[in-house]
Length: 293
Ligand SMILES: [Fe+2]
Image 1 (cartoon, protein in one colour):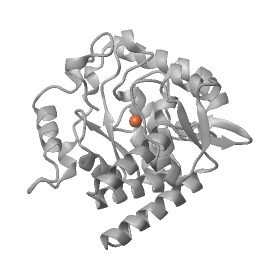
Image 2 (tube, rainbow, N blue to C red):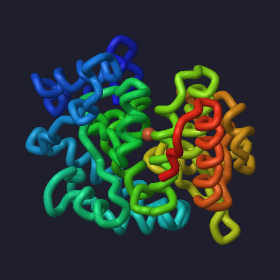
Image 3 (cartoon, helix red, strand yellow):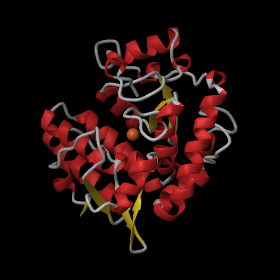
């Protein structure tokens, strides 16, 4: 979500036809002011996925990325991810539909109630959390330019759908992510906001998990990155640490290079339980009511 036009780090150009226009501009404007008086309807940040706007080159980019990652992931991704990818009917032959009988949402809804919703660009933190709290995942609809298939610093639909959404089919992860959104909405304390951002980064985006005695990928930033998926598992420059909530929340991160520190879960129940305990702490400090999914 969002593009750094003034400081372009990638080659080629995004297909802006997908997000430009009055609908996209109105949604982005609403998102930028979400939470201000009269701006409390999160559904107004969503747009339609104007599917006809994808070019043949966009579709080719999806297929190339899909083929490359699916040659690697069956051996190296979490079984929970792979099961989810099958369950939502993630396929190589077209960029995913968000709506309709062939859409990922059609398959996802009966499993966990999660849905992917198209957004025009970067969402401020509160708007992002408000989506998660409703089991709705703000989804970038543009796809990276073909010159930048290996690396794009911003999310695109390959990162958001291929990388994130399969895990939303898992009931335990689904509960974790909603609780994360509800808990993050509870606090305005910058101390907790930073710690919650770190938790998201080292789990949802760059998490590893041990399955059957082997370390596997599940974080979307790894799953959707041809380069970093291999680096995360094989490089001796990566410090793979056991997951611990407070240790993770104490660890800073930088976004513009491969991650030198990664955290390894033993199960998604461990992550769900850690999030529930953090949510309880926030509730106690804020004097609010329960938010567990
Ligand atoms: Fe992401």
